[in-house]
Image (cartoon, rainbow, N blue to C red):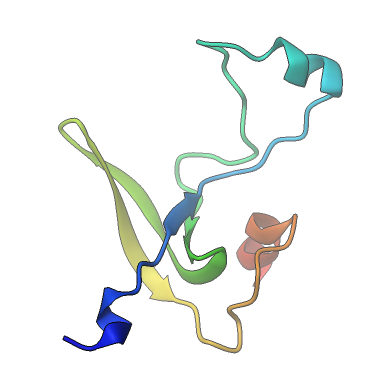
Length: 92
């Protein structure tokens, strides 16, 4: 096994965004609900080390949350995620 295959990659899924006031932020606690700017039909973005690599759908299977890739993002498109990443990718 080469050294490259032993390198770990952090995967994250960006499902939506929300902008709230500092006052609302300070009130967040267990059980708080934060409304995101998406619907259940909107795509999510799969990130590898904070770089977008795929667009897809969030799905559920029993007690597991799954990410189903629907489109790969090319290397030219893959850059560190800007603040408005979901908006920008939905517009393209």
